[in-house]
Image (cartoon, rainbow, N blue to C red; front, side, top):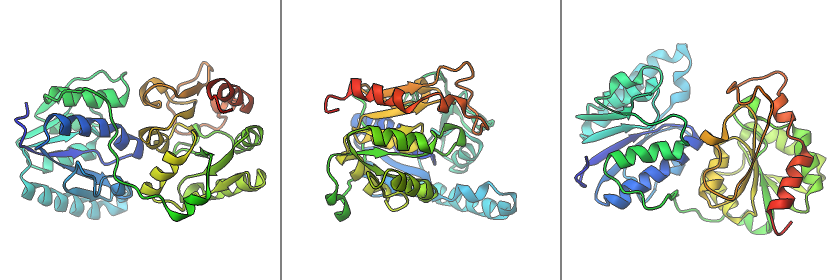
Length: 333
């Protein structure tokens, strides 16, 4: 489909893990067609991962979190039409909606590009905004689904790479060596591993630890630091995305629930110990080989529910179980 000199817009606003999963698509596109000009629509808060990226031209930032409230409806309409005008001025040859939701479909349509591409199985009726629809099995891992679109555009996928922006190691990180990263929580309440389980596991393992996360993770991260008497140090809420890249690259490995930050660690070349309960690792697990995926075997898992009062599936994964898996898999244990 591509000649190699097109202006292309990728619509993939969020979330962090989804954007990371899209990077091999970007890499395949630029390796096969180095002269194409790629721009990106991204949600506010994730632009640091794409701005100043050697493979991306312009980055258009949308404040999609404000769109969720009905009281912000007038603002949402204004922002949509504003970004629509910006995109129309760019005169993109084709727009690819990798998100497949109503808002991304609307943005795709507002671009007025002659070719608007998306998944035929896209949700929230977003497929009505495309004039080219590609069918890709939904049971494939997200990375492979996006690469199928790259292939349909004519790209060759010789290898799967996650191109990341340059990151400079922050000065404070120089004080830390031979550490394991802990990601204490995910956006879905149902994905979270009990805080005291992390404490027990940290006290069992012969490593030092750095706890990373957003501002919302800060309170729990400080509790873990206190309960482990400083064996785990918290930097939650204190790192930028590019600093987080440096943290992951310097670490030994990462222990995490199913969260977007886990996928960033994988993109940095790190092995992860991933704890899965309500979600399916075959679709959103750490991509590639060498990772440890520990999944609940309860009959109700995966349920794909964002909230659960009992969280049996995550409580079913004991600290001893994780300890044993790590001991069998890492030679420096």
